[in-house]
Amino acid sequence: MTAFLIDSHCHLDLPHFDEDRDEVVARAREAGVIAMVTQGVDVASSRQAVALAERYAEVYAAVGIHPNDCTDFQPAMLDDIRALAAHPKVVTIGEIGLDDYWKTVPLDQQIRVLRLQLDLAAELGLPVVIHDRETHDLIMAELRAWVRDRLPGTPLARRPWPGVLHSFSGDLAMAQEAYDLGFVLGLAGPVTFKNARDLQALARQLDPRRLMLETDSPYLTPHPYRGKRNEPARVKLTAKKLAELWETPFAEVAEMTTATARKFFGLEADV
Ligand code: NI
Image 1 (cartoon, rainbow, N blue to C red):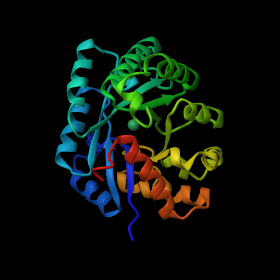
Image 2: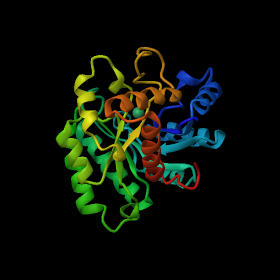
Image 3: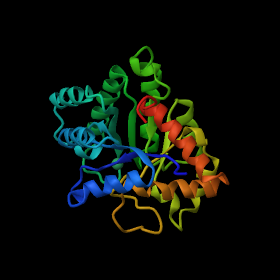
Image 4: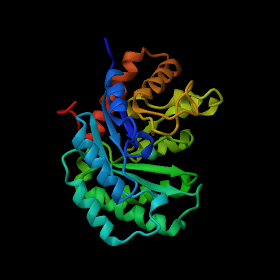
């Protein structure tokens, strides 16, 4: 029996897939991936994400502006994101967040664009996909303030979870705080890396029912393909690693993470 998996985070619009996108989606389907959520990082890629969701039954879209792509942010871009979000296959606002690793955009600008999108997501009732790279304290402060002051009473407050910390890179205390704020966590290929002892130790302690699998394709390729292009079919390798870490049958890991992703994205009726 094939176990059904959901890749909660990938970037299928990128040119890395221009030569063989149909085959990549077909391979995912064959591997039991029943849904994959391709992320927008700006207005153009959000539009492409929606087009891909129209083209492939298994593909759903996230629309949003990535912290590293908000240099030229204009308020009108938020209207574009809002219009795209009306599409029935747009299931989340992402990928949004903060990034202090690449330092391409000043943090105050990133924070401004993040807050606007958090509030848009709340208004639209769509959960958020959060990118956090070397901004743990800052992102938690933003999410805490949002959940406490601006989320209550919005359509998003009626959903099971307001957001996911994608490719989680914090510690157990941060995971606990994210749970307290109502968030779920996403884990990608790095948990399979040979030298990822800390992340594996952390993964053992996470709540399996508050976790979604992801690839972040074409990036973060799991072991033993590290260094090669990643694709959604490989979400299976991360699921296998978690089965090993949790000492839980693979089918159960698939069942739990898929149930969480279905509920998170509101796909219960679809897949
Ligand atoms: Ni991503």
